[in-house]
Image 1 (cartoon, chains in turn orange, blue):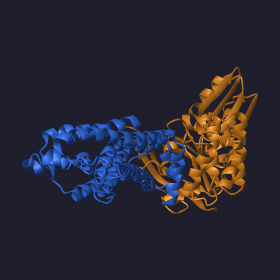
Image 2 (cartoon, chains in turn cyan, yellow):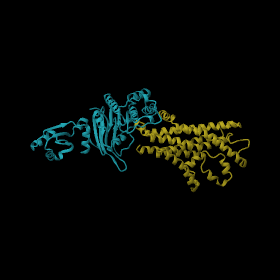
Image 3 (cartoon, chains in turn blue, yellow):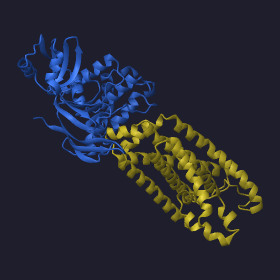
Image 4 (tube, chains in turn blue, purple):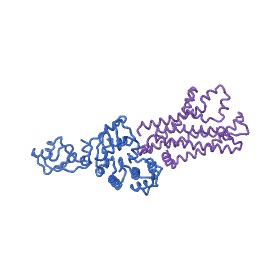
Length: 296
Length: 264
């Protein structure tokens, strides 16, 4: 088993009236692209902010690289949290020079040029940050995370503000970094994108982890069954609470998720002498799996 | 430490507001000295504070004049400290620096270094202006008598800027911090009316302002009223300086504690 890069144990965070995190635990191992999924307010950003040292947890612990919460750990991490944060009156090079100094880079210029090239900002390297579009600001933030060639990247909504081509570029970049052996922790709402890149995910809801595991496992948690039959009302009565969510129902076709396997459903229908013209399992997308978990 | 200085230099060198405020400071200081000179020339006729062969700009008078005039402009330079510190909150760059690996102690140290160098610039400029004005009089070259006022002025700037920094960390907003910084000055004066001198002498802004007294303060206000001498000189100058440094230490300690305790 590969090395544990991050271990989070029973992390708890309360704001004045809001219990933002209710004792979450998870592990990230080297080489994973670890997705943190959840609706707004589920605690994704709060989790990352605690892990990056800008929020204080009320309870629980976390440890980067097995070194606990040592400040020096953060120099080994490239992180983008929420919005790109730079000096508006400085250009990209000067902004990245500041990051390079913090990261103790001895010869920053080649690293800066390389990072800007990776995100396609070479042409605008000398423009002031305040003149950038939202997408360019996001690209610069990603460039700053790559600057010190970190072992781990922590990215919160990295495709915010990017155009479709930009999103594809970032996806390719993340996959390339994974191939180089980097570990990437990523929180995003764009489930299509997460499905394309993540190896492991956790799903968060109201400050708790409601599901974690390999992406494939999470996507196949609940079978997505499609039945074509003239006796849909009988089927619904028979399966009752085993139907977790009706995704679609039109004419004589019903698409639903169930805690029973398709085989079990077929068996029960046969025993009840309810006949279907067609019954099959549809591969679930991450989005469908996510919705099933959140609504469950 | 070198790293922190380099980081702050990258930020400051292209910030126009800093350049403008420094330029205003450099222009206004000599002008204010000329104004103060005109005032003293008038009252000298009645009070005979210095011989008619001397001026306010003669050595060693000039050190008192230049530091007293410059002390008012510390209040202007403090705005630079407030802008630089609150910018870190409004741009969310302080938060990003911590994410990138800077410790909160380094954040405080980097701003202390800015304050230190800004104080050094203000002090060096005062020394320069004082020297130029003094030499221009051509009446003696006693540069060293009373030159300790320059050192005391340096301590004063450190303390004022320390308070400005502390308020910026506390409030995180430039306008509020500037208002409160000037508000504390005003408030201390008002409170001072009602407080006994033995307490008022220990108020931070009042104490620090005594490091650069009005030239000939003693001759004008104290010697003419000897029974109040104790009220004017509650503390020796070195005690005032020490107390100012203690206040400065307190501002930075509270700022660090606040950064450590609060979410960014």
